[in-house]
Structures are given as C-alpha cells and as structure tokens.
Image (cartoon, rainbow, N blue to C red; front, side, top):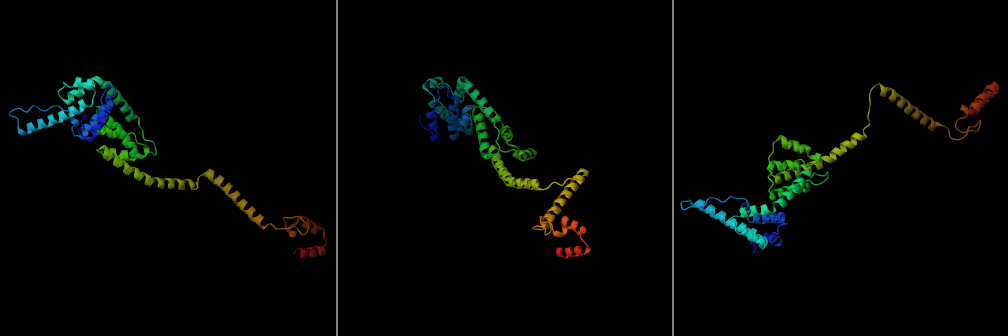
Length: 289
C-alpha cells in the first residue's frame, strides 16, 4: 500500500480480513482523521455540478469528489484481495462502509455493547488521580463514537460525573446549579483544579477532627451532677491521701520501734501516758519534744 501519510502504516500492518473489522475500522478512522477526510465515511454526495452551476458549486463538488476518492483508496488498499473485489464496484466511500457493515456489523454491535458496559460500570476508586480516571472514561466514549454509538455531549459529561467519588459531590452540585456546558477537555481541567483544592483542604479537616477528638466532653444534667460530684470527691480524696503519704515520717517510732508514725502519735506511747504518774508524764513529754 502506498503511504499517503505516515499513519497509514497501521493499515498496512492491520489489513481487513473480516474477523478484525472493529480494529480495522478504528485504525481507518485514525488515518482519515489525520487527512481531514473522515467525514467521507458518512457524507452524502453534493448535487452534481451542471453546466449552469456556479463556480462555488463546482468547487464544492470537486473538493468532495477528491476527498471521497482518497478515502476509497485507503479503504480498498487496506483489505484483502477478496474483499477488494466485492467493494471495487461501489461508487462512494460511504457505500463501501455500508457494505462492510452489512457483512461484519455484528462484531461492531458486540464491541459497542462491551464499550457501553465498560463506560457505565466504571466507577472512580478513592485515591485514584482524577486525570487518570477521566482519561479512561474518555477512551470508552471515543471507542463508542468510532463504533457508531450516538451520544450527545451532555450525556458524555453526565457519564463521567456519575462515575466520580463523593469527594466531588460539591463540584457536581455547582455544575448542575450553574447549568454549565463544557467539552470533555474543559471538564478534565475543571476536575483537576477541584482535586487540587480538595487536597489542600484535606489536611485542615483532618487536623480539626483530631482536635475535636482530644477535647474533653463536658456533660450536663442531674446525672452528671451526681456522678461528677462523686468523681470530684474521689479525686480530692486521692489528692489528700497522696499529700498525707508525702508527709509520713521516714524511719521508726522512737517508742515502739515501728515505722509510719512519730512517737507523739504512737498509740502505745499515748496509752502509757495514761498509766504514768504526773511527774513521769511531764518527763515523757519533754523527751517526745
């Protein structure tokens, strides 16, 4: 096959044999798009230029005829000899594509159903970069376009928005409220900007939640007054015990020899004072001091 442009090599390497109809048509569309004649696959021929036709009409017909002949060459040169014989007598590129669709259209229908299923069932996974997800969705949409599925621009955008995670709920709400109408490329840029804002706000939200969890909850009401007072009483008692423990004497009592108290607080010593004579009691007090 003579290469009309560098991309035509993919048609050389992937000639139409029948079972590969879907892949062949995808490659054909790529090549014709590069040559800006992809419209010839579905274009109706203009009215023939008669002798009394204007110059503009004759130019339009010549331009269309030239583009159609180029498209037919690409189609015929990228298929097997058997298929060439079946298509060679057809007048236009559109006629050729219609004939091939009649022969292998079931493959196209099955592929279209698969692509539609992929588009509708794909959901964004939390943490996936928005650009990666949207480009994946756009690839499904482009495949459907090449397979002949009829989807308007708004339906394509809705398919992408419905596949996003809850993180983009605010964006979707604003989009609907403002009745926006954007291309898929513009939508991708808008979603990337939104993703950047979400990433900036996320650390702040996490910090707020952490601070909230560390704050002490202060309940109110009768139950709290009762329980709160008991807790306070217990805390105060623990505090007093701790202070008392800190003030306990170190060493043994000079009277009984046991640790934990002074002689003046020793119960054995106090009991002995009651039995002693007044003179001995005075002497004992002096020693205690």
